[in-house]
Length: 293
Image (cartoon, rainbow, N blue to C red; front, side, top):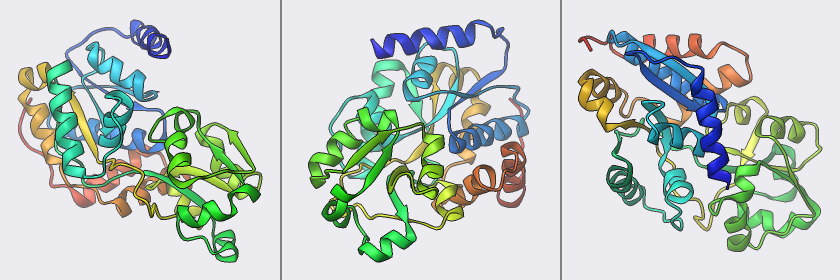
């Protein structure tokens, strides 16, 4: 039912958009994805490839369905998300195995191609205020389990539902919080800063971790699978426009986790325009692109 509704939403979103020869670049609906979608779009444009942006399109299933349906040509996905949420497989922890598995499955089932990873992982992360980490002796999620009944946690709806999210995490660590509040991703960091919650789930590359001086708790039981970020594209697009593949290949290994966190900080905390942030980063780190579409 959920996926059916999301497919309907995709259709409504794209119905108003006319077709063109442009490569359609999508992203999920949070800051890092806007940055990564814009990075892909700018790299394509630098090679003379016309681009239509559909950034902030929706969640995981919305973007995946839009790609499968041919409504978009490329977006950046995370290997662990594809493995557990899309393919519905139990988490495993070897990055190469996860990447190989999703690449095979996407090729076989949907004729989609995972291109080379961008160079960083963005895993789920449980974060707390630094003062609380120090006063309660919190370094790992295992440490958190000791004091969880005294704390209030804030988690997003997708994290609450996914097997690689709270349900599996709770079983693995025996977590029993005093209160768990479901809230929008954009509100959790503010709630943490304002002491309305004590623990939040974020992403390991979130800029707010830097901006709010938060502590990421170590996953000492290695529950979370690897989440390498990589562009996923329609094979038909890559075959019809070989320059698209060359552009995506140029981004392989280009971003470290620290760099991604810094870009997120500049957008989400400092308030810079994400297109300007990407433009500055590309000018400093990438060789000017050549070639034609």
